[in-house]
Length: 263
Image 1 (spheres, rainbow, N blue to C red):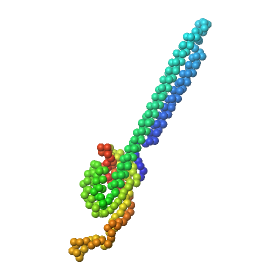
Image 2: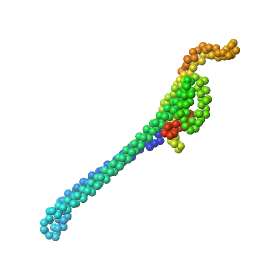
Image 3: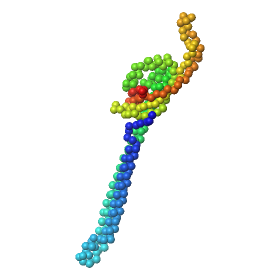
Image 4: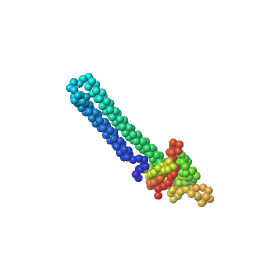
């Protein structure tokens, strides 16, 4: 059985993250290009001051170095401030994209952890359901009820006496364990349907041809001793099961609300 999940695929989150990082890199590159252009403009302004070109056609009087230097300084400072602003905006864009990618990744991790806990509970619940013992039928019934909720709890509680009688009479001892599980779907009522593959192995008491039974010669009021040791058991072949269970959260605790065998 292949484990499945209906949450947003990790590959989609990775694609979104890669796209955001690409946009951030482009923004940084644009900022660097803007800064380089600003520096080139400042150097060009230093080499060809507009004041000098205009004044040359009017008169040939020399320019005042102090005034020309002050103009160049103010122009260069303005260009530098613009470039710094572009870099700051690019940094904010990169930080925002990185933050979103981190939150998306965190959300995926949290959902994956919740799904693992849910499937682990479903596996454990099924294992307890197919594990029986003639020595403690009451404990078995109570464990099943403790893990149950809703309709499944009501149905099992209604027939628990029949379960107790059957387990006591059969004398079987079985130990079940889950093999694999996977989320099939998420339901509108808040429950989650999980498919669980499980197996059980165990033993049954051996009954010989001269088992204990009524003694006709004694009037039927006494039993004749069995020729077999009552503690002798035979191992039964492992049984494989596939169950579909609904898991629901009840006040912070996971419960089985529906149980059925997969046909």
